[in-house]
Length: 204
Image (cartoon, rainbow, N blue to C red):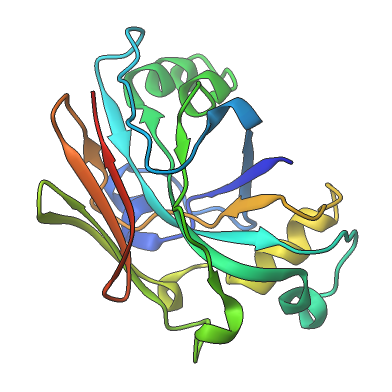
């Protein structure tokens, strides 16, 4: 199982980090050791003083595929959940300033919590109109809608599969909306799709 992630997929998030808007999806990966399941707590690592939350819709791949055409892409995922792409922003900024890869800032242990439940695709009336949000200590920090993605689910799957074979069980983090921010010890993070709470974890 691999975790593939899309960067810079919401215009307002690109603006808040003062990044350039890419022509094609920005792809990076997290190792399987980044996965955090069953609402287990997230422990702040000692190598960073600035860990940020990034809430995302996550696709679960249900069959193997390569060079997938966009029109067939919807048949390659069967469920949608939530994930947090925890990012060591200080480490990422340092690495980016030197022109170095920033996997260490994104792929550290526990940096990819996912919801306990993934909702079947059939439960959604419109995949291009899915509301989701992250609350920190009961306060809304991030709100997004899949309609605001620069690259939709089908485009993401088709693009990735030109380079990397997708396999059953793979997870794709589809990008974060604006509102990313620092987490601290004692924070409680809750994630929702529409008004259904799917993610609930403590920062320790």
